[in-house]
Image (tube, rainbow, N blue to C red):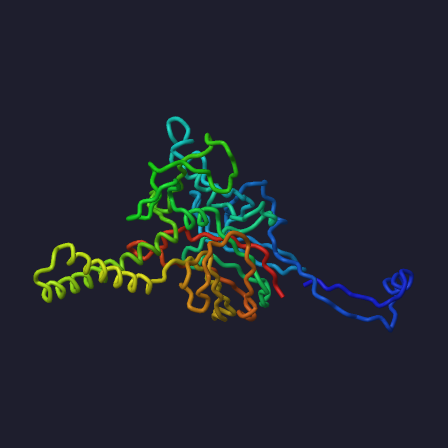
Length: 367
């Protein structure tokens, strides 16, 4: 932390005298002046990203020095942290069936288009942060170490555009949605590309963004909640409807099929709603863990996306993070290492996150 020294005086001349002489009656009031680690001293072309060859240092003697971990696999893939200053907020135009180049894209070109979102921070306005880190929380590789143990006052975190678009809309975006799968339809109506305001219908279309499995099956976070509610509500409704109908028939042997169906429907809807209302699903969470001499000092959780009622402590939470958020880490105490992990309740059959394990990090302030 940088310290500013304030001096008491009544005129500019006296203030100047205080600045250039060692008077015994000066007021030595020291206030902290923050020096955040911002990675802006690292050379990086504008609107670009870089996966460093290995761990790298950032900061200085005023801000403190950290070593950022990265494992570069040499094939465009990595774990740990990359550097970026990209700020693209929309679906890649070249991946849209309405705007794709003639002849389609090669696999390398398709991956390059995906990377315009995977290495972009999502902000509502032009990102003012310049360089920042893009974390890929694979295993325990997304961490930084401190040159001297100290308290991390706070960090800034944000969603990548890749995660924001998938969590908000999914791999397909159109005007129409399949109520069974909760996927937007490739054959649906055309719409604006998010984040791009225009009145030109020629710029409207159906937009796509493959998920990490390479398919267009990834759905929005709200859709995962609706599917989970239906998965719980439908069998409960069927069981209740059938039981109510059987009892009604036994007590009313002369009842009509229409009357029997009405009894079934009423019981079904009541049981469905009760079971569905008990399901609260849909989150993407970043967990930040502190260490000192190899021993954990605590954890801090921050939701990058969450549906209502998921967190019992904050049931009103309902958002997909749209900008940088300051996260207080003082509760971790003195640390020499900070580790980042991601989790979600939207997982595949092997329990792996369906959304990318990506997040953005900047503005690290050490006490």
